[in-house]
Image 1 (cartoon, rainbow, N blue to C red):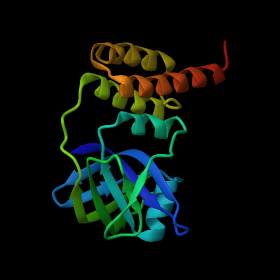
Image 2 (cartoon, rainbow, N blue to C red):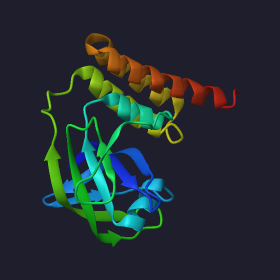
Image 3 (tube, rainbow, N blue to C red):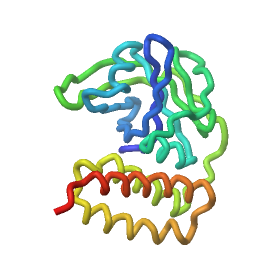
Image 4 (cartoon, rainbow, N blue to C red):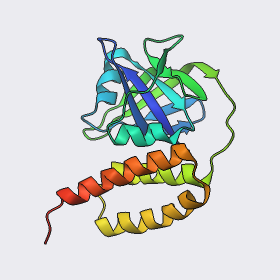
Length: 188
């Protein structure tokens, strides 16, 4: 199963990096597959740990993809690092093994500490739309503009029907990112 979460890692100097990511959960193992090169991979290899943040504030997902990475943090309990203060729950992870790959190594973790901070109230369609649009933004360099436009048009339906202030703000950040990317594309 793949879960969309926010991964926080810390470098040797104590700076926290925040990244949205799909993680794989298989029984008691959590697998993170960061691309090379990436800050997430560098930090994990340095400290052998990470934090998984379960969060329903989709602005954090959208913000990380659009240059807004300054989110409040709280110190982790059992590892060096931090979790998102807005997290509904978090798991502190310890790296147990690596299946190396030149593009995307598989990093296997065990959870050494889990905390529930607040109840999960469920996602509305706008939150889903923002998450899916964030994934599209992370793949702007790989997908044709027509595919992105078609997907965004469909996702906008759920957004228009159910969005609150946070979802609209996150959506606007993502749409600005798509518009900016399209302006950079050479016109034929």
